[in-house]
Image (cartoon, rainbow, N blue to C red; front, side, top):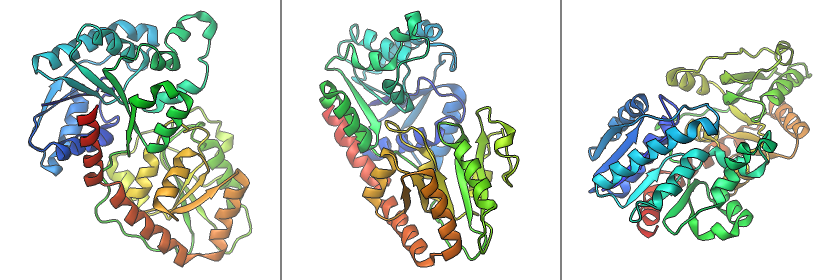
Length: 385
């Protein structure tokens, strides 16, 4: 029996990744019963997606989650009570392991506290973008409580032999092992589980090459640089004007002056999956101008893999890793200026053959990142942890 819990996400948040993860687990252990505890609406989204995979060995359990965007000191008590309930459930089900699909500082503190009581239960915890917080000191650190809940501190302190961390990407595992060598044996990795589009098509652009920013538009993801790129390229002298589009929604408070002189349509509403699929099928290249992502992966990158769209990106560990694994899948650039020059070069030279090569490499690479390989690796991690 396998017990999995999503302690933080509600509704559609992370539903794509969690449904794909559950399919990986079901593929790795087809004879085992799987129990998945999650918030009511999140559970609905995940189980509805699993119907297409015909997963029959899954039972859903509804749980309450702590307030999502409250300060950590506010979430601490609700997180502790939630974790008590999760450990009680695991104990009643006679599960000796719990897989936590995400975590927060209060959540991880609670897990480490409860492991001292439930001595026979091991935990595998999946930290996502929260790992980036290990790289910087929290704001208002002088107030003491931000330091108490600083994820770097929570992550490093109180690790017993009954806890392990599962990260989404070998590059994250290697970086964590370099940064925190005392955790070497506690960190394992798989690639991001993802339900790739089964029948993608790709055609080299003939004119009006279309470039897109995918996902939530934030400054940390470089949305300001994307607007600047669109403005610079749209006024450049080229044989066929490039087109730029935001396939997602704007989150940060971006001054209208940054995008008012571009042709980009701005939305602050989350796109439906159907609208997202329609719009991404109409573009040729995806753009990534991320300013962080040293210790986290990118769901938007896997969207590009899913719909077979070559990538133009600022170099960082995420893209270094996947370019090394998959080969020529686009263009890695060192600076904003290099990205701008590459966009204009593509528009002026129409590299059709290389475009086909890049798309075919993405298609081949999806097999390496597919469910059979992920299931084999997860099975090994689960049994050896």
